[in-house]
Image 1 (cartoon, rainbow, N blue to C red):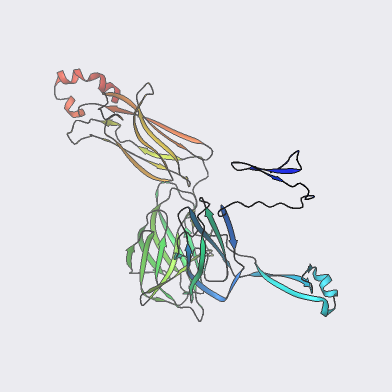
Image 2: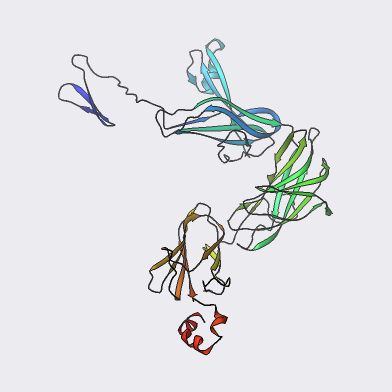
Amino acid sequence: MLFPTSEDGFIIGGGDGMTAFHLHGLGLVGELQVYGEGHPVEVELRSPVIDLGSEWNITEVEWDAEQPPGSQFLLRSRTGDRIVEENRYFDKNGKEITQKRYEKLIKSFRGPIETTLQPGDGWSTWSEEYIQSGTQFRSPSPRRYVQLEAEMLSTDPQAGIALDELALVYSRPLAYTALGEVHPALVEPGAETEFTYFLRPEFARNSQGFGAIALEASVPLTFREIRIDGTPIDVEITLTDAGLRLHLPQLISAPELLELHFAATVFQNNTRFRAFLERESGLETYRQQVDPGDAVPEMPGAGDAVSLPVDQVLLTRLDIGAGLLTPNGDGINDALEISFDVLKVIDARPIEARICDLHGRLVRTLNNAPGVAGHFSLSWDGRQNSGALASPGLYLFHLQIAGDSITRTLVRSIGLSPQHRPQLLMTCGRLASFRPYLRLIR
């Protein structure tokens, strides 16, 4: 910011202090530029639309960059099959003019026409970010056109990124198109559900075919069977970190309807089940992403995402067993096993689980960390945060999660006794001495 002084000068304010510039006898200031040291905090670059010439199966994105500590390089992609041409018109002096004026000029006064390609109908949205070079391509493919967007971030003014090379790895498509659709599309949260993923590939003359299918999701998958045109077939199953890989007995290179039957438990809304066609060739494995779509027109719905009922339920299926623990070392009820499901939480939110006495005083913190939707298991051994064994009596288990707009809390009672209940019935004397605690845990 510029501040005028009483001596025909300016003071530049900002940063750690102010610097004065005196301009006596130099006339008026037309422009003053001040540059800081170091690299920008953020730089965003976007490529033009890249024309691959025909539909190619893009498999990976690779780059070579100098990335010192304090900096980060992020990349996104999008793809499509339709483009729109935009023309810019210039006169012979390089001034941009309208098309109408350009057409009125005589040829000797006309300059160049610059044509740029812009995404048309049906393009995908920008993909999830690529953080590491060699990451599997995350936009729909095969496609003819692709566009990349890079973001360079720096938290240290002296840390700058130098991008030397950026490459797309692509090959002939395994299938001309491949549509995938999962049913049912609406399920009960937290309950194991039987699913069918319908896969319909189409092939062209240059298609390679595929010999394996990878099915991936954010939840564990249990394989049931696979059918081709309604006939069950035997396949070799490989478990992966992301899901399942099904090795087919023969190469598929003709249109057929495949049905993948599996079971899964869904906790988040819009949980996706992604499928990939695969073919091994020597040491290489070629992969093609299946597009979500209407693979079975005679069935309602389309796509590979599963939804949950629209409600505000965030916590469900809380199970504390009998609600009694007897930490006496006999191996029976020495710890209280607690389980519950968190639903519809995509971004990590605080999940608090604690044991309190009847006056609300904290006894033990079982969980105080953020989490997302899923199944949780906790255990209480009857001890306080200090490590000392809590006194026999009645306690309260508090479970709370803060969602985007609401906070949900569940409370259950827990009984703590130094003896296992059947042992209390052995003698009348011992039974009488523990009668107050028996009333609490009924």
